[in-house]
Length: 296
Image 1 (cartoon, one colour):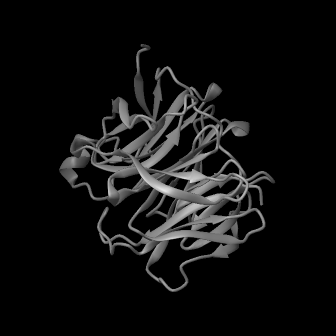
Image 2 (cartoon, rainbow, N blue to C red):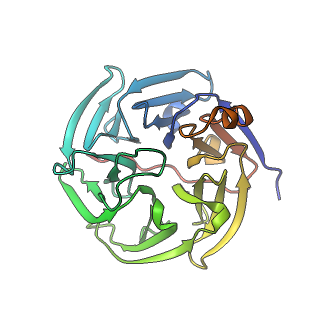
């Protein structure tokens, strides 16, 4: 097994870093800081960071630019002008809700889920959220509600299974998935988190079809086999509040992990000075796949 190396490549001090996605054309990592309402783009060559305020998740767009979730709105993001155009709005009846994590499916739909605003990390009014997708023609489909904290999501390599995390269920779930229609059905749990793994947060899939889940308060990412339901690997980080992960870099051979610092006391921040930073993990011996881009 290759030697795993973990380094903080950007000491960003994110209050809650999330939604990392690799943009191959610019060799950059995009990610968001949800409480600070900003999206950041870190150039892996120049090490420079550009920031635009306002978002909770971000994704690539086939026609250029990005799509993002802002409050309870799906938006098109013009990076140069630092402006956003609203494409659709959800949860109109729930003024305390906001989008959380989002990701584009293999057919170019932008999936994202909502939750109530937190009063403290992972403390909120429960069952207020829902899962949605924005289709390329800008119409929105609602899949289900009663969600606590809509979080990690990805699709199997054959595009027949949708994986999803509602954090406070402490479970990674799977659905049958129809690529043509975007329909999901037959929900079941493929992995229940163990106590020391804490809260499942963001997630991505690797080129072998295994899932990587960031464990909030668990200070780790875990690799799961969704077929057998077994944990294959644990990679511990020098911070507790790991939030999400994605593959990037050359041939998608590096993993990038976001984390948070909100909710940490001064003593905790002294113990974990890199909390809120962006971490790069190399030597995992497995590659990821390129992210999909929104088709609308």
